[in-house]
Amino acid sequence: MNYRLIFHTLGWVISFEGICMLLPFACALGFLEQNPFIFLICMGICLLVGIPLTLIRPKEKSMFAKEGFVIVALSWIFLSIFGALPFFLSREIPLFSDALFETASGFSTTGASILPNVEALSKSMLFWRSFTHWIGGMGVIVFLVALLPLSGGDNMHLLRAESPGHSVGKLVPHVKSTAKILYSIYIGLTVLQFALMMADPGMDWFTALTLTFGTAGTGGFAILNSGLATYSPYIQWVVTVFMFIFGVDFTFYYCILMRRYKTAFSMEEVRTYVGIVLVMTALICLNIFHMIGNTADTLRHSAFQVASIITTTGYSTMDFNLWPQFSQMILVGLMFVGACAGSTGGGMKVSRVLVLCKSVLKEIRVLTHPKCTTRVKLNGRPIEHETLRGITVFFISYIFIFAIALLIISFDNFDFTTNFTAVAATLSNIGPGLCGVGPTANFSGYSPLSTMVLTLVMIAGRLEIFPMLVLFSRKTWKR
Image (tube, rainbow, N blue to C red; front, side, top):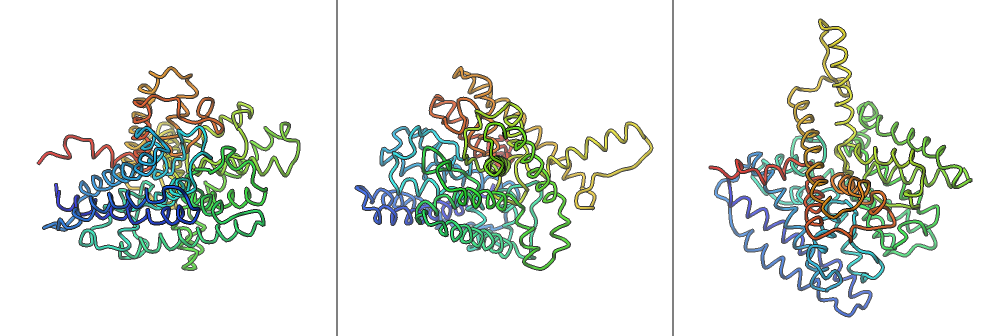
């Protein structure tokens, strides 16, 4: 294990987080808050820890997959720990376990909250809370890869460990250029959404920016207790469209920019994703029309909630706890499916579900016609055995972690629906579940043990499970 390389990279990550705290500090000064220097104190702590670590120069800059997984897993854990300091030191969230949960929920773009009254937080804390979504959406390691020569050119292990999806590749020959392209698209779409939000006459810059952070990172932290229910239909439609946009594989946008339209529109995962959104929106529209009675409003709420859940954003315009069981079951199913690989969304990813379904159909075909030879294909190309094995192992690991987390939090004696959707909402990085953790409720009722378990589950879900499994594997640390 290359410990010096791990410490060196962690130093850059922690220092980067400290620098990011300048923005909420400026926000605190702008709103003339009583204690604006809390972010400067936390930034000082980050730099005091981070800068000495960056001075540890690795003798060997080559990085293997093991180091990549460990660096990414540790980076996200330390991001959450240091990011929780402003909430805890300001006493706006008195318990550190709750502050850690809230911060991990932000960085992992989950959007689950332990706050019974969001509006009680100061503006700067609300800004930091939403800004963690934007940082975590594309990934801090991707950002550092774009700027810094972290590991002598072997950054692909970092990119693969942090980026969502079963198969992450280079858009261009150099990994650094790939990271720059990804962040350029991310920033461009963020700026576009902010501009469209500001076009609403009743919108102020702070609300527009925090909602844009939550949408771009598919996080879902709102700054009002009512979520997005009180905003205009125009704002709700803008958020709906951009939740959908950020749930698409960014490779699609790169192909569009490069005028490779045939490649872009032949992406099977994107076509399936669009189909799922359209069909599920139509089904929910038909199911809840009698509750709303207006076609335009029914379509808006249905499309918003489908886009919010499948992209794992977690915003809400209505309490879908009150919807018929059919619509609720559709939303629970979408929690597991998630968005496209290579997007900022969570869940198991459309491509994995697509490959698993094709694998089942292949096995049925082989059972009925033993002599036929068929291969599972995606985008017209056969999928390698290694990829199929990785998807299968991911699915098994997902179910195993889900079951263990569900068993542990059951000690708190909440009903099954609450516990089941709480784990689903955190492991898939969605935010709200049903019943006791629904869109009008929160996670504050869980014990510190359950809170810590769900915190780890959120980080594991954001990192696609394997980095956390590698980190806690005993074999990882053997010589």
